[in-house]
Length: 483
Image (cartoon, rainbow, N blue to C red; front, side, top):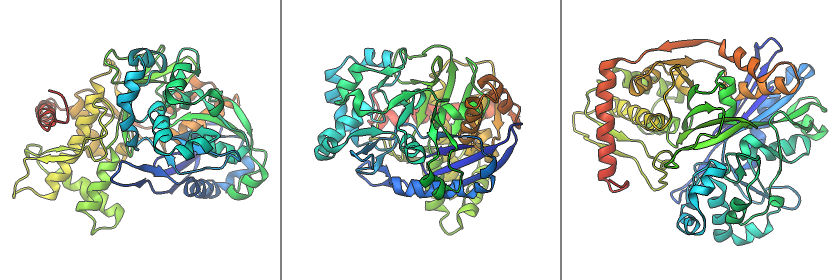
């Protein structure tokens, strides 16, 4: 079984020895935001959702051989001496640490830090976040015994062992990619020691077994092996069959990302991209955007709020598909700032060219185009492969949006309809940990799933490229970016 603990919900997938999905479950929880840039999660709400998700699959309990965990990158949760949370967890979307960046950049060699950790010195990463906590909430910082990721806290709740895998650790900005140890200069910059962080483990490591208390809450059987797992991004690669060097995957969920597999650290000279580990010796480089499905949800809530949620999504996508491509609207979808390539938490969304004749269908289409433009900005930073880009996540259930992204990128893609790439990847990793299969064979099994090839339309690509160039010009004109 694989459990993926995401930004707005957790998903579980049960996978039998032949690779067939035997059950899935999902539970949602809120992301707590406000105008200050706060974006936090309540660990209690997440634990309740995790228990519900696992209980929904508890009918399989006598047959479950192992459980591996996946989790969203960049979360930060302070624990006290009793290993209980002292506050809510910061998520990747929390931008308040931006205030620390000028000072941090004066105190370190950014290029050297990036070469070692694979992470730019930016707000999602722990050096900025830990420094911000130290300055903004000094009492909380002093009371904290250990700083952990949410995934690792829930592993602790399940089996009583606190550790983090090198894959998720590589997304903190505190791990040396080359040695897979905590990086002393990054720790010093953040103001913590290795003793204030979890011990490091490989993704396939067994942390322990399900405790009796956790078994009572989840409906699973006590003694179930619990495996460390990895980041949601790394596991999405595995669950989509994308682990060979040069292969590229585009995932669109609440946020979005483009990731390319490499057999060595792949670092950009301009430090705009990142490079993380799936496991020791296996890397993936890329970039993430803040506003993917989050933009779709904002549109649904704002423009289609009179409809039930699912009906609102369906109508929105149908309207966008019916709107003309030459509606002359440009939507910059920076509702919560942006990561790659702009690394600017202060960016905000704008609509240009809006006239009395435009409809909500035009707005819907232009917003989806705007997200596609953001993903293309990331894609352009990576070396192009001769293999189709795999499209995963929510976009796999939205054929119009998938074709729009394909036309924007201008390269062949494949719609990769896995049950849930990250949760499936976690389940496959559990099978590897149980010695049922190898990582390569698990990837090949995932690759054999349903894939629909999509080809870009040259005329639409040319038109979208002109609109994307105009969007970049407008973004620079706002003063948010340097010319």
